[in-house]
Image 1 (tube, rainbow, N blue to C red):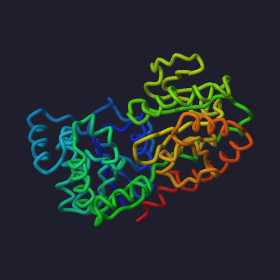
Image 2: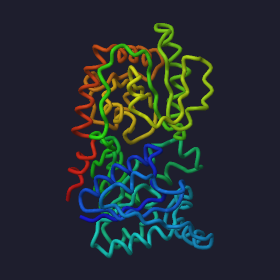
Image 3: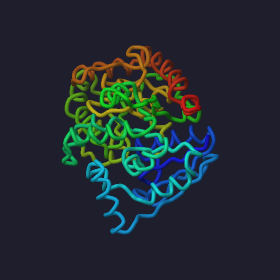
Image 4: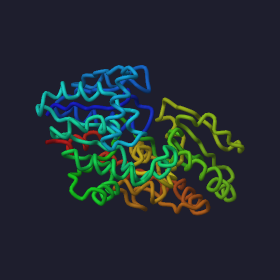
Length: 373
């Protein structure tokens, strides 16, 4: 089945949400081709990886003039779209999506809440899919940043879930939350995936004494997780194992200003294999946020032992003690769990099971099977 996929941003690979879009595009393209409509915002051009996906045609929508944006904004606000989302709606994305869809001749997918808000009029007349990045109302920090009430965000999210013929949620936890918010919504589990087939697993760990925290620090829950590591976890860990290093990598990690020389600020690292190969374990210390963390899935695919909070694991079908080491969200407890994950005997067993799980449930091929008509 041909798909018309609409987003509000230029497609890149520089964040978890962007990489979800890429995995989804790959899976949909394998099932019949994709017309990818995007607003030219956030990056000068799409990541070159998109040009290499067979069956994908990219359609760029330029930024509209201020009068057109103002009219669209006012209509969206009148229709129940919160200000934070209404500002990002470009009328050209919706009109081109409808034109390419040709009525009901293609499956139309709105990727993310802004694109879904833009396509609300289309979804009222034709069956369409809302692909959620997360259950947005679970992000309490966003409410503070945007000056938005929880009630307003829940009303908006309920509108999307009820208006669209189907909504794709990234995790079982988000499925439950969406069902509670909109009991009549038609939901499907569409998890975050990585290109497992293209990832060569690292060799079994043999005593590496570094823990890797790889994240986009432009995302508030990741910044909170890093603060937890620096303020609580690592001081407790160094009391028992002063030789262990913390490697922080990803967007924004080259300027965190860590005071201890055992914290390596790596910044954006293009060669992820070398980064994971040098690590004794990967840390996913999320304390809030929704969805399923792609860095957790990625570490499983690289066959690196993972230590994570129960909150981080809640969005994945993983089992503590089988696929990862679970740690309480407290400094001493997380430190002790990290030292367990650094032990090759336990770590390598977890890593092997994690790689197998990634192949089975979090690969692009597994997502192709889920999305098959």
